Image 1: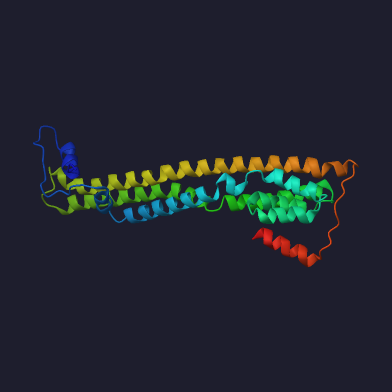
Image 2: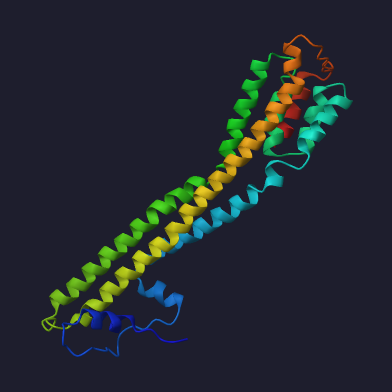
Length: 264
């Protein structure tokens, strides 16, 4: 790999017109990405930590937000079938949701437990369960938002430190006049930290909005499924048609045990 003499290039660019280009043989050369990290100064460490945390959050959310994990295939069809075959027995619906643990199952379980009540009550419980599941789906997304905001600020902080170091070096040297290469080290550090902060922040911001849009699409799909379920299993009862719900024979302790199993 070709060796890049960054400080020598910067020194030549800052040199006075007509001056002989200066090549400092002792200038730090860059041969790899690790050299950039090391020579960028101490601010590079928190920026690197932000990149690792952001990557971990991204991988975790990509796994959790898989569609088959949030909305298992044929979930609604299977739930309807189990309710119809059991004579609309709530226990059958709760058992089906327990056997298919997922965010959509927990939302539907909240409504199934209230089958036979007024549509308003059922919709309220479904809505509350849906809000809880949305919070779970958006878990850790705020971390990406914070990283997208903090990483550029860390890069700017590194820039300030680099410029302070550069001008402090010039001010403390009695031979600084005309030797622009003495500024190269500090400016070099400043440029690296700024670039590193943006390199971390831009992908974090893009993935934050992409994952947010993905969650919105999943929530819309769950909403359409709940509307279809309510229209078929709830609203006919409010219109006066027969909605025969099989009586619950288990005790309240059994119902509570089923709720705990679904929530887990």
